[in-house]
Image (cartoon, rainbow, N blue to C red; front, side, top):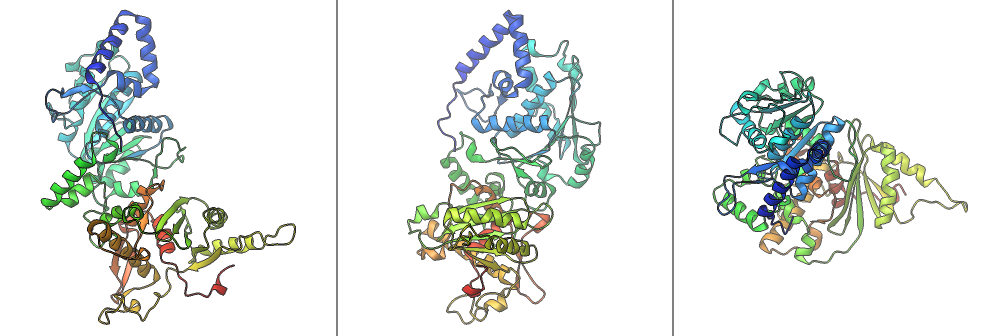
Length: 545
């Protein structure tokens, strides 16, 4: 969470006035500024743009200089990169982080400095695109920003009344245009350099819009808070690749920018707690979870692991101060065909210490997983042995045959590799699912397979951890689970763990639906389940090494 954010708006006004005076007095300086701004949208927004917040009370101005905080700077970098590399982008945002205003400012920058550019804007209703005097709509925001651009930077002969009409703004000097569309009509106009789709998780005819935009633009930017899992926005988000400022994105892959509430330095933990408590008291916690916590599963029934339980498990080992000891165990989910990814998770006792995924074949997974396991001191590695897992087993066998110059095997002697068959029968089939309760079903009667049983065993860990953290209930460490907050992919882990739902087979047994509504496979979550629910019914002599 950002801290110490207290911008001096008076000093910023003075700086800008001095800057604009210099532009006015020195034509060479003005020309240099224009050239610099053309390639530096961050500086243009920081020097020129304003933002408006009607909720601000005196003595703060409601219209104020747009001073970017660190995550907003990364956001503009993300947009600029998508534009330059002609790649689609998606912004998964919490409410009130400034994402729409930033896209509007980026639009004005592009309109000013790039001739013949066509920028499209769409939303689910026409009134959200353009409604006179209503700054909740997109075009009034754009007009407001243009109105406060210094005249020296505006297009020659620009006239607001003539050139900024309903859902259309023209740059008379360079031919650039900003146009708006609404509902299912989005993308049915002329081609666009870039197209912004505001609140696209809420579109009613998203498939039709996607089809139309496919021929309309090379750069489509989805901007939205989350709205459950049964929509195109969710499917695109889960199929995309999270963007990081210091990581080279995969060409051709949808880029996903995550904008969390905690990245807004004006939002404190006290703010979050008060908002959450109010939503809960009004019976609207699921709305808060979607719009603030970006929780896709907030309103979804039949979740296996509730997001609140997952959040409570972050650094639970530090909160509960229970010992972290025992074996280091790994789970390897092997990539299926297509765009699937290999995933490896490692736990030390009850704490998840490592979780990552990568592309490549099953053989590549083995060659990459083993060194990582050695580095972490893993003694047991479980791999998904169904189907494509045969390639992982073959690669491991080949690695075991490699010897050094003394004829000794090079494969790590203390690493056992074990198959994990998700379709196998549940473990301890005759035991009751509630220990000591003979009235409860047996594992064999309750679960369709090992996969369902394993997910529910991990569910039990998360639930008990939640009860321990929130209500002080006592459990042994081996009954709990903790997610180390330093995990680089923590947000992906949380999303994947809360994605699967349960359903019942024709004979009433519990099954796992890992990909509801066409979501991507939760590979990291599968690997976590494997390492926290190892299958040790096989003899140690049956392991691959």
